[in-house]
Length: 227
Image 1: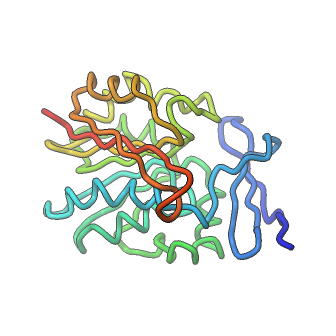
Image 2: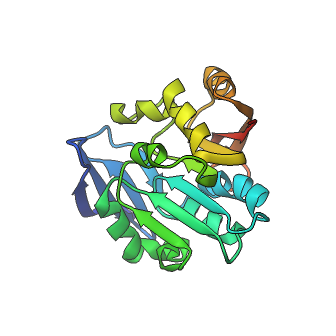
């Protein structure tokens, strides 16, 4: 009988709590320490994390020296998908606030996604993606955000800025012409799609299965910069 085995607990900077890594049979699970027992992510269900990178990266892969930004390393599946769909001259910048999550991906957890941190096209910034977005203008061909459960499912109040009008405005400024923004969410939210459009994007709300072709579906907003 499978059971959860706690492997490690790491602190989230800025006193935002802690994350726990569990082994569950052949899979790994990440939860918030002291939470309600719900899973933030696991290695068995990552179809929507794959799609978060696949959809926008396919659209920008033909651009010479394409450069993309991923907000949130998670279990490495979005990074692995981006690398799969981009060219050899691309650069994938990953902003991950929690150093321990990076270390987990360098350890046994990384095997589940194929150790994408070892790819020479990967550049890791141990920083809040909000700060990274504010640092450069017209810097990326695509931005992929998966830092929480979505605009209406926040587990960390500090992440709310990313889903605000100001945060989306900075995403727009950080993108190159015709750049792509992809935002992951555990649930749909029509109001958020309207907010993305008001920030200067042509936006589409896509439903993607978390695993296989049935069961739980997640939402990804795919948006193209208009100007």
